[in-house]
Length: 72
Image (cartoon, rainbow, N blue to C red):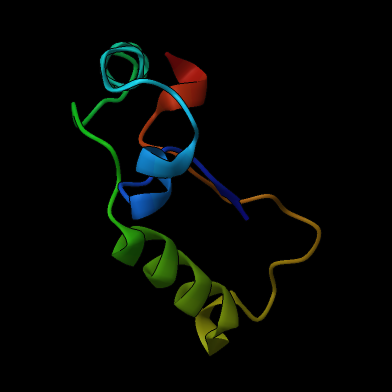
């Protein structure tokens, strides 16, 4: 799985000053189709799907859960 920008407490721990952190977050957010960082539950839901019987025939694939970041 390839998670994209997710709203977790780690963003406040990357070592950037608050103003720089805000600028980076704004740049990233501008590329996201929903207009905001994803929720941790989005990644959990994707992981649960991959662990379910519904994904029984999925092999060797990368599931990108990034709010459209990589297509923007």
